[in-house]
Length: 204
Image 1 (cartoon, rainbow, N blue to C red):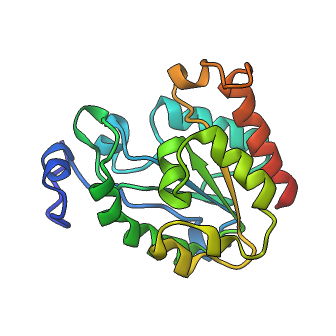
Image 2 (tube, rainbow, N blue to C red):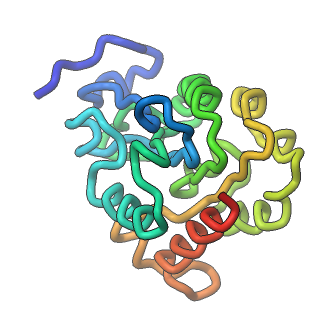
C-alpha cells in the first residue's frame, strides 16, 4: 500500500480516509490541453493508484472520449474538485470543496483548456453554483457561447482564471448505476452523456 501523503491537512476526514492525494494530470510534453475533465473526487481505485479516472466509471469515460477522437495525455487531462477520497465514497462537503478549489484554479490556469467537461452534478455545481445537472445543461446551452461566461461562474477562484472563450460542458456521472438511470426527459443518462461529449467535440 502506498504511504499516506503528508501534504495538505485542511480536511481532517479526508486526511483520515485517503491513502494519497490524487493530483491532476495534463497532456504530456507540453502539449496543449484541448479538454480538462473535472470529476467529483477520487474513488477507491484512484486512491490506490494515485491517478484519477482509472476505475470502472473512469474507463467508461475514457472509452467514450476515445470514440470521439480524444486521447488522455495527448488531447485531454483529468482533475477532480476534491483531490482526496472521501470516507465511504460519500460526496465531498461544501467546506472540503472550498478548501480544494484553489488547487483546481491553479490547474485550470496551467492547462488553459479549450473546453471543460464536468462529470456529474457535484463537479458541475462546484463551478457554476447551480443545483441540478439538468438545470446546468439548460443554463449552459443558453449561455455557453457567451464570451462573458466567466462572469457567471460561481466560485471566485475559478472565475479569476477561467480562460477567455473556454466552454463548459456538464455530463452525467459515468458510474454504471448513474449511467443506466433515466434523465428527467425520459432518456438514459448514458445517451445524455454521449450527446454532451458530441456537443463539446463539435466546438473544439
